[in-house]
Amino acid sequence: MKKLFLFLVLILALMIPRVSLATESATATMFTAGPWTVVDIVWVSHTDGTVSYTFEDYILKAIRGLTVYMAVTDPGATAPSGDYDIVVTDELSADIFGGTLADRSATVSEQVPPNIGGAYGDRPVLKSLQMEITGAGDTKGGTLRVVFR
Image 1 (cartoon, rainbow, N blue to C red):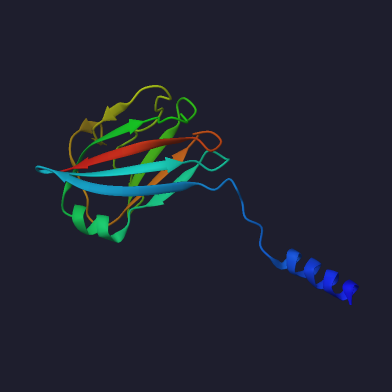
Image 2: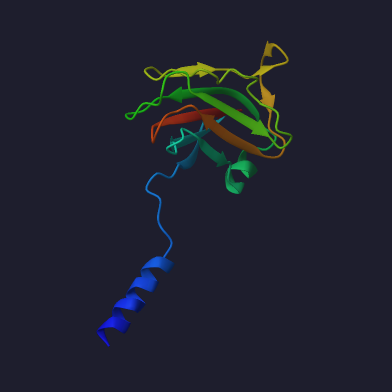
């Protein structure tokens, strides 16, 4: 009987999925300040230094038809590797910041406006947005703040 019990416990242990301790996370909050709508995405990278985040429906409903004014990056307490990259894309996979979120600092907050075809200016939000971070390092974190008007 003991052998049967141990065998069943072993089988159950093998069937239970393993939980990875090194998973990425990204959580967004939204607030308004006068004419501005602000989305803060607090993120922690995967062990491979990447993070993916798709803007949630309630946020998209609030920002559709607005324009992206600027982004602010803050490296946070567990600072990412220097020169990590952020890309925010629309539903057509176009980088709405035109590359200005590349090579972020690991020590200070930085801010940039969108760059459209070589010119700086507001960028309209039409349908959806996705954030991708690369090169941040193993389980490092920070904040991306996107300001809309």
